[in-house]
Amino acid sequence: MNNRTPEQAAREKIDRMLERAGWAVQDKKNADFGKSPGIALREYQTDAGYADYVLFVDKIPCGVIEAKKETEGHNITIHEDQTEDYAKSKLKWIKDNKPLPFIYQSTGIITMFTNSKDPKPRSRRIFSFHRPETLREMLFAEKSLRGRLQDIPALPGKGLRECQVSAITNLDTSFKEREKRGQAPNASSK
Image (cartoon, rainbow, N blue to C red; front, side, top):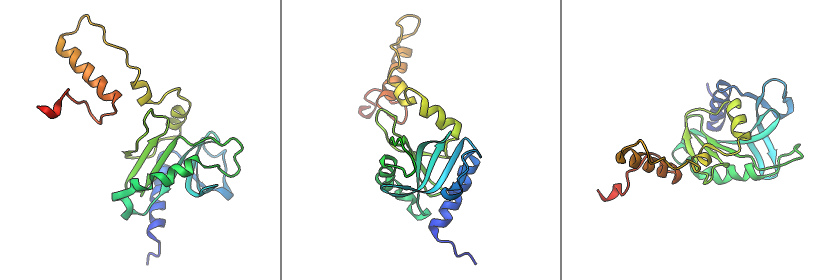
C-alpha cells in the first residue's frame, strides 16, 4: 500500500527530473558539493521559511524550486509570489546573499520557469529543468536571451525585398515586445 502524500509523490518526481537533468539532489545535512557541479538541496532554510529546493552551480546559489502537489498544476502560477520570496530572501549558511535569478514551480508534471535576468521577467512552461551547465551560462551571461533580443540591430536596406524587410522587422518587434510568436502588424484588424 502506498502511504505517500501528494506532496511526497510530487517531490519524488521532481527529484527524478532534476537527476535526469544532471543535478545531484541532496539533503542539507548530507550535502557533498564535490559530487557534481550542480547540487539541488532539499528543504533549504531561508529567512522566508524553507524552500523546497535551492539550486547551486559550482557552489553558487542560483535558483529555487517550489514543489506543489499534482492537483495544483492547473493554477501553479499562483505560487510565483511565494517562490519569488524565497529567491529574494537570505539563505542560511551563505554570506553574500543576492537574489536568486532562476525561479521554478513544479508539480513533477508541470514545471514553470522565470528568469529574473530578463528585461520583463515572466513565467513560462518548460518540459525539463535546465542542466547545471545551462544555468551556469545563463548566470554569468551579461544579458539573458530576451535581453539580447532587445539589441537586435536595424536591417540594412540593401539586398532585401520590401516584403522581406517587413517580415523581419515585424518578427524583431514581436521579440522586443515579448510576443509568444511572430505577429503581423494590425493582425487583429484583418
